[in-house]
Length: 411
Picture 1 (cartoon, rainbow, N blue to C red):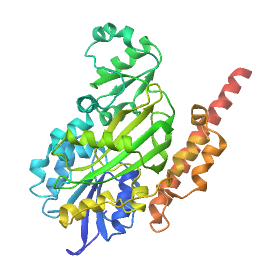
Picture 2 (cartoon, rainbow, N blue to C red; picture 1 turned 180 degrees about the vertical axis):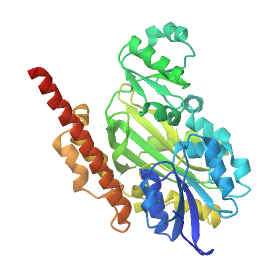
Picture 3 (cartoon, rainbow, N blue to C red; picture 1 turned 30 degrees about the horizontal axis):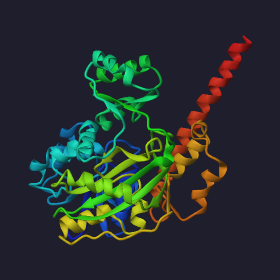
């Protein structure tokens, strides 16, 4: 899709038009900034937003060269536009080609040496350990022999986690593997190696999704920390090892200080990042789980109180304005409606074992919904139509499977 536009129109380039990209596009659109979206698949619903003036498709975000090539192809038309990455793949590509791309574009991302430390969990945990920040007990093994050497130190259930999540998720369609025996551990670890994925073995920190807390921050182009925004996960999709589907705002001085300690280990870092900690009741400590170096799912909640990272990037890097993020209240909820309802009414509910009150409480309080928007209705409609079709197909398969099972039993 391509529309005509005038040279006075404020524009940015958005890399990835999924749930995150859609929220970013809308929040920038409210500020009078239109978006050019580069996307990979039809389920990136940001391309349907009224705030999008162009959209361009690539085959695979995992291929850094494809991202670079489309940007270089349009360097004259898009000259000096701000590029905002909304997935790990695009952050990786922009930082990797930063020296080349900054000749033609404005990139609010840190240098590759910093991005690698945040995308690669082994390097992330190394930074945390040097800073005295607790992490889950972790084993880095390069062979089955090395795994067998530490067998007595591994407790179950354990987790097999990739060093870099975006490569792993593209193959296995999940964030990690939970394993309940040594044989299963070896099977999953070997499967990772067969696909060229480096994986580590970590302990499972006990506790449900409510033990997870996030701290997002933005460091401006001068290296100044402009503010933090903290949230507590209440429910994930899928439970325990998925992405957040219900969140609420909080303030926690402990995780904020831990986040600041990490920042001190990266004195040249600029841009956005978000730490995730899990509270471990066994030793009363918060353990670092991961760090994201991009906008995350909860954009609409942050923007509700003016903590608009994408707009801050525009003011910071394009307009050269000083950035200071505002304060926000506690106990304001963010809900991904489709993911929450689908999980509640599927087998995910058995994993969580929450009460009816726990499920309903966020809906009775102050809240925002991730996807739904009356002011930008088309993406909402396209999104929900696609989900209704997908759920109908899923139900049909279950019904057909049951009927076939009955027929086989009766035959």
